[in-house]
Amino acid sequence: QVQLVESGGGLVQPGGSLTLSCAASGWKHEYYVIGWFRQAPGKEREGVACIGSKDDGTDLSDSVKGRFTMSRDKSKNTVYLQMNNVKPEDTAVYYCAGGYYTGSDYFDGCSTSTSRLKTYDFWGQGTQVTVSS
View 1 (cartoon, rainbow, N blue to C red):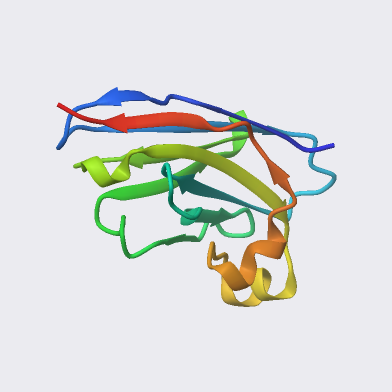
View 2 (view 1 turned 90 degrees about the vertical axis):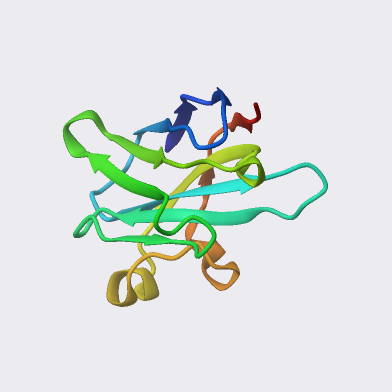
């Protein structure tokens, strides 16, 4: 069974930086996608970023593009979400989710859009990020 464990959440001031980590274990093979999602109080869950193991290709939502980056350390089985220039609207519980490649993931790259949610079978417990002065 795949397990995903997030860490690194906390309180950060607007304009500051924070790095979230997601340690993954239990994959049956090396072709998988890991994504970050977030949910703020009273709002729907939103896809933030994803990375595919085939080529470490990433996809980021428009709301974080240019501020957040996602990367993977294969030797540590860990993915990272580097959050720069954070804004109060980034406040949310951040979830790490993963799954094995679908055909769309393999040929078109990963995505956290609603139409591609079926990729993500495994979810972490979430970590709180609060952006406030």
